[in-house]
Each structure stands twice: as C-alpha cells, then as structure tokens.
Amino acid sequence: MIPYDSNEPSGDWIEIDTIIRQAEPNDARALLGLTKLVGKETDYLTFGPEGVGLTVAQEMDLIDAFATSQENIMLVVEVDGQIIGMGNIATFGSMKQSHVAEIGLSLIKEYWGYGIGSLLMEDLLDFSKNVGLEVITLEVVTENKRAIELYKKFGFEIVGTLKKRLKHNCSYFDSYVMELLL
Image 1 (cartoon, rainbow, N blue to C red):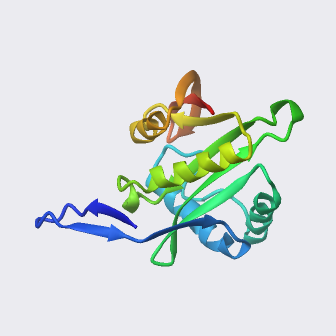
Image 2 (image 1 turned 120 degrees about the vertical axis):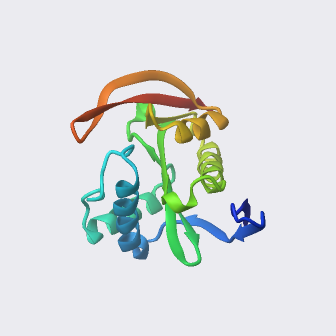
C-alpha cells in the first residue's frame, strides 16, 4: 500500500493498493495493451502507440522465457486488478557477460510520481543481487529527467551518451547509458 498526496484541495492522502508480482502468460494481452498506452504517453521509449509489435502468442512465449530463467525476471504492477506497470531484468546470454543484465521499467502516466517506480526498482534490484548479478545497465533518453533522477536515486551513474539514439517526428533524441555496480 502506497500513501500519496492526492493533490486534492483538502490536502487528503489516499492509499493505493499495489501488487508487484511475476508476470504470467495470461498477462500477455494486458502487457501488450500497456506497451501501447505507455508508448502513446511518452516519446522516451523505443516504441510508440503501436506497442512492441508482438502477437499475444509471442508475448506469452516471452513471459514463459522469463519465468523459466533463473537470471531473468519480468514483474508486473497491479492496482485494482489492472496492470499499470512492468519491469524486467534481462541478461545478455553470454558466459563472459553472465554477471551483467539490462533493466527496464514503465508505468502508465497516471501513476507517475507516487513511488511505484521506486518499489518496482527495489524489487528488480533485490532479485538481481539474489541471483548474483554484478552490473545492471540501462539506456534512458537524455530529456527524461524524471527517470534519470529515479535511476540516480538508486545509485546508477551515467557512463556514456549515445547520439541520435531515437528518432520521432523528425526529431532526434540522445540517450545516456547508465550502470549500477552491485
């Protein structure tokens, strides 16, 4: 349960019941819908309102692959029975990089700023430590100040810049490479 300032004129606090759990194959359709929604809400992702371009069957297979891996995980965030966010840890599959993984997370805009991203990040980093990962990396668009601050809060550092990494509506976006040494 997350208490947050509702920004109501009364100044009342409201609690949001959240469940963070491992993704299941029957979440596939909802996760594809989530990617379409978050892709519409921000220009800072590698996909837009079209989502990630997977079929429900392909998404189910992806969820299964995460579920059967000991070093990878896909988590979902539920509020009132609806999936409002997701995050994952994905290793690179190479023995020489078996200590390194990439992290990703997204929430629908309605739930930004309430600490849900921090809870999801904590769970993903706890998982990473428990399975013996040593380096967590990510890419973030340089203009995505809110996300950058979240990552810095957890100890991620900017280690490089990739120029013109995304192109949207004839505009280019650079991205930072960030990493956390566990």
